[in-house]
Length: 67
Image (cartoon, rainbow, N blue to C red; front, side, top):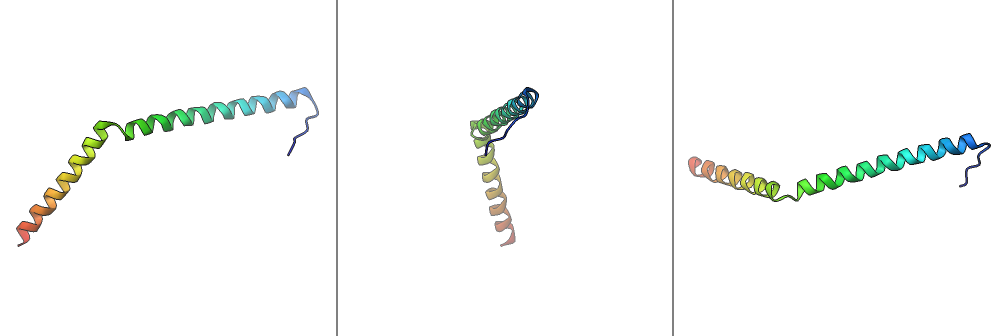
């Protein structure tokens, strides 16, 4: 759907608005990229593994204490 403009001022305003929307979208993409890099980092994986092992160990210890 084409939008019609009645003067140059409206065109300039629309272009400025689109440029800002583009910048916002680009910054959101950069943020998502950074979060993704953090999620797949080796430190994050090691922390997750340690937490999982700790939970399993506590579960097994509790299981032995109940017997």
